[in-house]
Length: 209
Image (tube, rainbow, N blue to C red; front, side):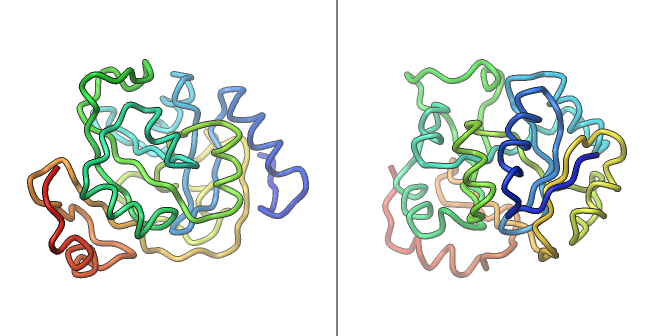
């Protein structure tokens, strides 16, 4: 396995090349370490499931580098979603979004009804996402286990499926907060780095759209 520090000169180019070659890599995020793959390469996507021993019935979350990349996925940003995105993107907020009914979407999203997506607040990962486009990124751990705080531990837990690791130092163990904004009232499905009370406070008085 190749290893780079996030601030190494060749880290971005190496990570981009690995992903475009259909490989699975470990990257730092602003919360926990993530395991990433290009969504357009089925073998790479299956590599994430195999590495984590994750049921294939559970869709993988998406990370994007810009709000425009999110819109290019054909996703619907309601008023509630836009308010939350303005407050916490880039940052530790994952939004569950549905699709715009009349907008095209990438082929790899055709079977989905909703997508969990976020824009992370991590310089290296944002640069990577702007090079590759949206990526499938989920926590770098065995399914159902806590995510290790270091890149070495995360990569080792995923076994031989990972070809490249980007070391961003010791990270926190708190995941992003997951908010479903497809419902009539925003539903916090997982409380993480952002307390539920702060989410509801920001949304107080926001009408439905």
